[in-house]
Image (tube, rainbow, N blue to C red):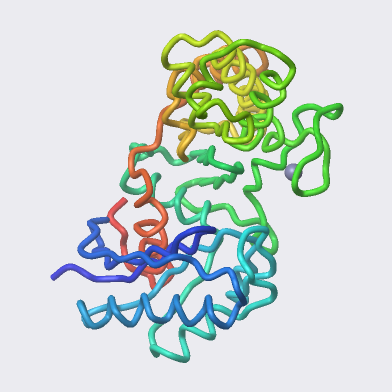
Length: 320
Ligand SMILES: [Zn+2]
């Protein structure tokens, strides 16, 4: 008999929940838009999602939640989130007291890293770095088969590693973070700037002729069709990513680096310059062979990973 767990991925636009078995199979799922009003409303929607999943499948052992923000792992408390109305919210206690099931809360990138490590592109590697290239940049680090959370649970903020001290201002207040140079937001900003400055490119046409409607997606689509500016921007973002990955390779010596998130769909247009830069910068020659691969679970990584985290914390073998 397979064990069933609930995993919930609380993101800036959607709250996704699902029932997952101990083989990493997503049995049923549902999503609701993330309320942006206040913490109380958001927590109620999280409980609604869990309640509905429990009605569909009452045979659940525990609940895992992944939240886009800083999470105090020990306390199960969301300390702060740049994109959610959550500040010092005791989410674990809120959920546990309502459903009476063992509940665990972690950062969304950490649980997605666990999901990819266990059932996705991880391929059984003991040491893995997972990086999410989306609107922002998040990450998770697996060391010896365990999520590395740091002292308080804040480790893995790969997006806020400084790769250019003279670089642009980041949303976190620092300058030259990887997120400020290689995220979807950064790519869109660079394209807007170039086009407003007079560069010709099919990016503008793809954005309906409006500079303000340019997104990372229009840049990657244009680059996929040989647009010179699009390729330049992705190549530069890839180069910055490569500097970050070389730092990570020097510090952690991973077997594999998994790249997920919406921007990973740009594939080799971004990964190939990243690989080149990494090879130039890693110290140990063997690290040049570190594999950089695209994630496999897509948007399900968070839900599957959150459920897997709960199973692991309850001492169940996740089979990975
Ligand atoms: Zn930053």
